[in-house]
Image 1: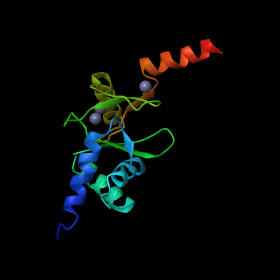
Image 2: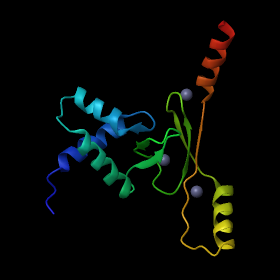
Image 3: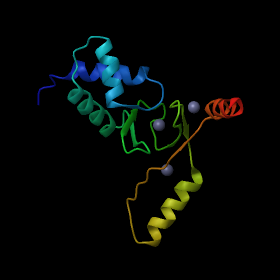
Length: 137
Ligand SMILES: [Zn+2]
Ligand SMILES: [Zn+2]
Ligand SMILES: [Zn+2]
C-alpha cells in the first residue's frame, strides 16, 4: 500500500508531541488548522488511531467518553494520573494493579489479559485554584 499520507501523519505526530497532556482529535485538528497545514479532521483521526495502534501514542477515554491521545514518554505498559481541568498527565507504574489484574484474570481462567487503568482528578494547582475561588465567594 502506498504511504501517500506519510507527511500528514508526521505533522500529526509533531503536533501531538507539542501538546500538553492528553488531547482530542478535534483540538489537535484546530492546532494544525492554525498552522495552515490543510490536514482534514478525518486524516487526524486516522493518523492518531494508527499511532496508537503502533504504540507510538497512548489513547484513553475521557470521563465524557471522548477519545484522547498523547505521545507518551514511556514505551512500556504504564498508567496515568490525569488532571481533568488542565490536562496535566503523570505517568505512573502501578505494581499493585498489575498483581491484582494478573490474579483476577487467572482466578477466572483468563489468559493474555490486558487492562487500562487511568486516574482522573484535579492536580494540586487546579485544586488550589478551585479552593481560592471558593474562598472568594
Ligand atoms: Zn503514557
Ligand atoms: Zn490541573
Ligand atoms: Zn497495568
